[in-house]
Length: 389
Ligand code: FMN
Image 1 (cartoon, rainbow, N blue to C red):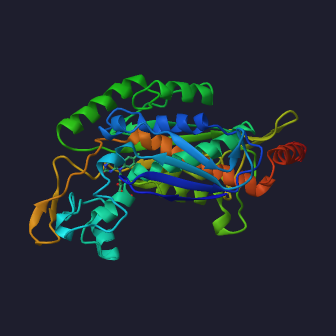
Image 2: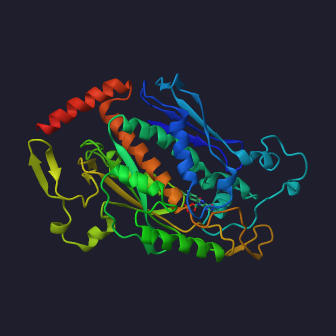
Image 3: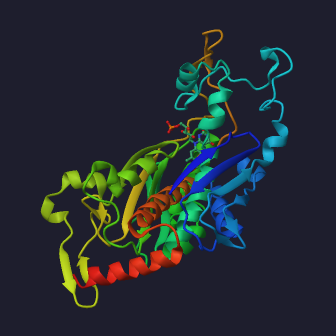
């Protein structure tokens, strides 16, 4: 599978074209809308999330509630576009360049503004901001919703939770099932399983907002029910853990990824890290522990996939950092564009989407991608062989 996204933060719409989705997958607008709504929730989000109530328009590749195998086009309109038609107009601008409203000449540290302006020769850095904005993650979540729908056909479930915000760490909270994680995080304003930490995280976000500052955090994605052998050790660009790491790092503001215990592996001996192998008649091969987060040799090993991603604090600050005006070269405070003080809970949903995408793509690579019924049969046959190996 592959997808492309297009669209600007204050343009008319965001678009993704998803190609390679098997035919006869049940897919309805609400499957995608519910994921879009999850991305918009979370304590610490700014006014934009109240203005926009994201809804998808499916304009190709689905007929009578099922996929046809053709490319699927997903569109999310920007409700705010009506206020930006002139500033973001497609047609040639009538008037002087200096008449354009809301031009950006004071790059925000931590954003794409200055590097993008230098690279593409944009004197109005709005050209950079509009595309580098995380508004684009809306349609990554839409593509991820399709991936989740594919995974759900084979009993593969995806969830996420926030494990740290602004230095407040959640305790390791036990959960029964992945549904338990899904339910409890949905009820938490910061998508956290630890209710004590949840309150402290919310306070930290409120404090950051009051200070005109921003805070980041860490999210964890879990994928359960994955067959053994997705991805491959035979070539570096087939390793699924590497693809997942790339996808997570591709999320705006993500600065690090861990698979399983991740960096903790540097601090422990091998005897405490590697997951011992067991076998029994009913289940076949299993691991006693899951320190390596479901991966060995770039392949899934049948244990849940566990991925963490770290998000830096949002770079737009209401108490702006120092910058330079690119027209006058004078020192100025950076521009302010409407912004959140913390988007870690929303980023957890984006993280789920990109991980789901990589797992679903690897699944279709292994088991075929034309007709959902064939894929089911292929998986069943394979799982039987693996169990009796
Ligand atoms: N950055 C902002 O300045 N304001 C925001 O409101 C904002 N919201 C975000 C929401 C989500 C869900 C995510 C994942 C990121 C958000 N960011 C926001 C982060 C920027 O988009 C990101 O830092 C910027 O594109 C620069 O890219 P880099 O941090 O990956 O280098």
